[in-house]
Image (cartoon, rainbow, N blue to C red):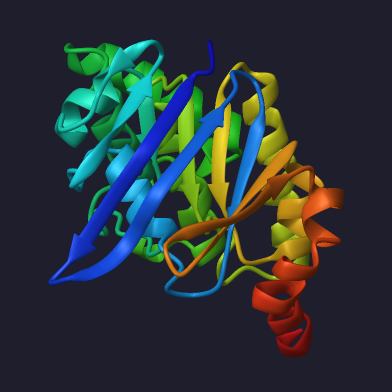
Amino acid sequence: MPLLVVQQVNKSFSGLMAVKDISLEVNEGEIFGLIGPNGAGKTTLFNLVSGFYVPDRGSIIFDGQEITGLGPHTICQRGLARTFQIVKPFGNLSALENVMVGAFNRVGPYAQAARLALEKLVFVGLAEKKDIRVKELTIADQRRLELARALATQPKLLLLDEVMAGLTPSEVTEVMELIRKIRQSGVTIFIIEHIMHALMNLSDRVFVMHHGEKLAEGTPQEVSSNQKVIEAYLGEVAMLA
């Protein structure tokens, strides 16, 4: 059974259909990419899967259990975590304390949370900066910190929403390697990303949204050569590059 199953999910806001009849499956152990133009409904879909929105219709099944309508905290405890387009750390807290916020989702005692948080900071390469206030970190380090905080919840599935936004080419390469390392550790990845060479190189399969609907799905090679995708999105990306 796939780790995540989205079945005929719909969501509208004031009559505007943001997500329409979306169905997809994310298999355990894969990196599953989600692309589409701005306003396509990608982040809305993430918000539905992670419990920030409730679908108007349809169902979401994670790890064999229905999670439709459950709150984000409950869904996170079941093993589904996410990051956000805009990094919003606790700026006056240390890097370690920020990651402990995620760790408390799994462990109660302070000492255990601190050990788990430090383990994840080591994993993402921020152990030496554990005592630095987060507002003093670079945007690249804050991106790594957000990954560490999400990983501290010990997820089975990690949703990454433009985790490479604002990074330099060399930083993008480093985050790509970190994402591969996360997958190798046993975490399944569902990722939205506008940096096409990164997403196409990372993903096993890619799902394309346009105007809230499914436009295409397939391997990176199949999607990148799909004429509908080129016309709706990839041509636009090429012109902006």
